[in-house]
Length: 274
Image (cartoon, rainbow, N blue to C red; front, side):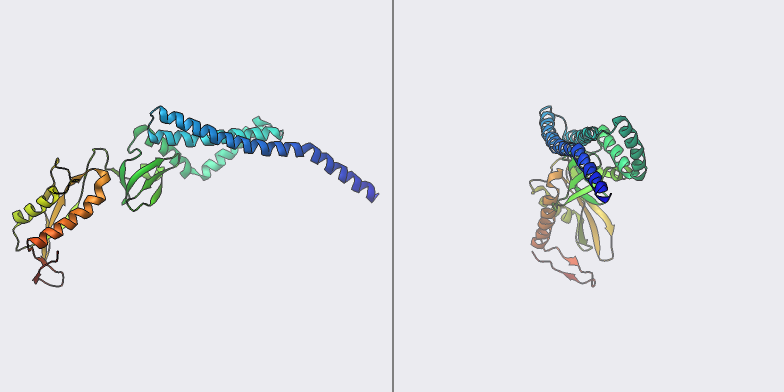
């Protein structure tokens, strides 16, 4: 009796294997070939979009969306191979999608925000933006997030929903950016003289724009110094290069002109080095 039961199990196992093994192998082949074709088609579409001279941000968004849709089609084909009723499968996916959507409201919000970015274009690829004190150039705009590279060569992954709900400063909309520099001047010095020295140094920097002209003015009176606001204009790509060069040139000019500064330890005046 036990031998008969064992033989029945073996026969059932063989039948099961003979029935499903070809389907499993076919599903694996479809998965590998399907994803390979998706990668090829994605590259072809990307090349076609590039030739169509569409904006970079639209290209990245469409390619990401197309990749997800085509991979979904491959999964549907595999489900059909196993005999799963696609209509029922769609209904199950719809219910699952609703449940997942409720759990991932933030991701759906990021997707909607990505659509808003593409439609209204508060920023685009290669724009310089500032968000939550994070300054950098937009690399790519994806379905759910935006990639921003900082001057320190760090890539920031910022969810689109956070950008849309926050305040974004786009420095590239007007083709120039106003730098905000602070210089300290002792009370004993003459402001027109200091202003002239700083202006000459700024205008000697090639990448400082001559129009609009740099702005220099007194911003505040502190206990030991007068705070001078120095605002040259540059194109966004030259921001950090000019930022450091401007401070270096102003310090050197103060040294050459023997401009004194007040140290925070007291009110005694002292010279600064070159």
